[in-house]
Image (cartoon, rainbow, N blue to C red; front, top):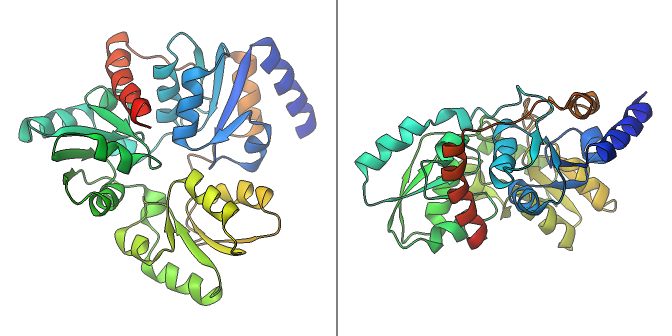
Length: 302
């Protein structure tokens, strides 16, 4: 059955002049059929230059919005319209405007895990891959950073010369990882390196051997001479790690590292998206143009 769906997906993809892009956290079956697989920065760059008329974005809502912002003339489809991001929902455009009133001299930086409305209120966007580089590129000393407090605290440690004004948001998946999880994982696999995402809490980050985005974790594990790794980010990354490194061993840091929203997209979702050209991402022109500015500035730095 799945092979029949895959065949039809490929046929529809050709008919629609479409490309399928997928985040590293997606289901294995979706990662297998994707033309492009990566983290938010990889996918942002690709969508900005893609020659295809239609982008099928296998991820969550803010990612598909970002693709639309960078490619406004293209059709961007989100196969599961209810695939959202709780962290992105923790900040609104009005929240950002209030912060700007309180800190009028500060630069405003938003994590890519935000809505288009929020991006439209910010000076520049960032991803977990380039956050430190983006912050260092700014002339302002005071930085309003939204919405992820854990990534914000990580940046503050890496760029101590800046005064980080950090919003109190977080990724519910990464935030639930605890210090005890790290201790237990190390006890079970004492010869493995611990690699974690900066969306984890500071005390978890402190215990890691390496901290980075999904792409940076993949690159580190792939190039490292070590053979065993404890992975502290969403479980979807294990598929690519194991596929690219069959001679290495990977263990999930915590069984709680599952994002329900990233797991909503299935093969049938992609098929339906291409067959029925749904769900189309649309944005108001004024929001799109202002949000585009924050993403363009990020890509110039990155």
